[in-house]
Image (cartoon, rainbow, N blue to C red; front, top):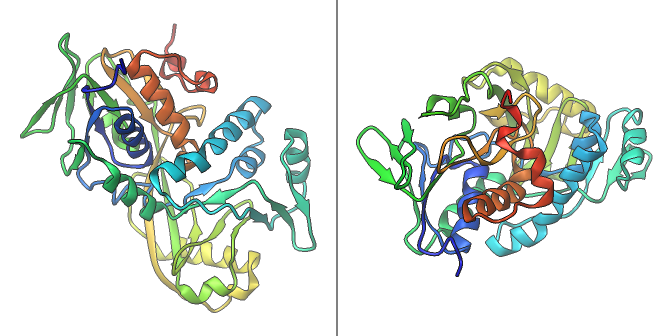
Amino acid sequence: MNPLTRSHVVVVGAGVMGMATAAVLGERGARVTVLDPGLGAHSASAVAAGMIAPGLEAAIEGASAERAALYRVAANLWPAFSKRFQLGLVEDGADWRGPREPLAGRLAALGVEFEDGPEGLYLPGESRLEAAAALRRLHRGLRGGSGCLPLRAERIDPDADGPVVHTGGERFRADAVVLAAGAGAPEVYVEGLRLRGLISPIKGQAAVLGSQALAAVQRTVRTPDIYVSPQRGSVIVGATMEYGRSDVTVEPAAIARLLSAAVEAVPALKDMAPVGGAAGVRGATPDGLPMAGATSAPGVFAALAPRRNGWLLAPLVAEAVAAAIAGEPPPPEAGLLRPDRFDPA
């Protein structure tokens, strides 16, 4: 018998980590209740460009071979994941317009396929999707008694009969709770679970250009400082990495710096004025990888803090958390994401 059939799981947080996990749990027969005061609309996931960039992220970070392999495994899950939940993955590669070295050397050392052209490097293995639209599809895809509620979780009480989530006015008893509240997770009190000081906020701001910019940007362009990514009807230029900041104010000076860097990478964007801006707050652990799996609090699981690779890693995190809740072995690569890797013991 499927151990998740007829189980009730509460997911706290409606960014990509929470919604991907909710989708996989629902697919496996669980009834899922997602709690998020903004229903994910103001999450860092919603304002992101939705890049699935295993090669570039590994090379830009100077990642180890082990971490680069983790990124590849996660990216390889995306075509099937996108098809199952109709998320509209676009597999058109990405261009690197920054200095060729040391990036080309890092890509070669990690075994990442790329082509060297007159304007820069082209990586055929990168892909993308429209983040906000994909989140909406994940929301609409919840079925079988599952759904999202605009409520803020304040406390989670582990209990022998199943954890209880308190929202101030309501309480939800579940067979399991998935904490996926991103940078806001330390604000949710969970007895026996220490997150404050472990998850740090990183503010990210992005500029939005109108549809006329699409003539100059057919696929994602990356440099050491920015990305320029086409969407349906717009182009996103992002994103700042402002460590320790948790506000979501869009600042004109930051938008101006992003646009200046975008014009340097794509000169055809010169004189194009932004039509908007956005800001979100990412959560990050000390090693920059998310927490995915069982925590030290009974019945409480984590899908947390992917730094800037939430979209890339979401399907792998979702599978790892679903396996942990079902009492099954996790995907082998998920060992790098164990929440207890930060425990002093």
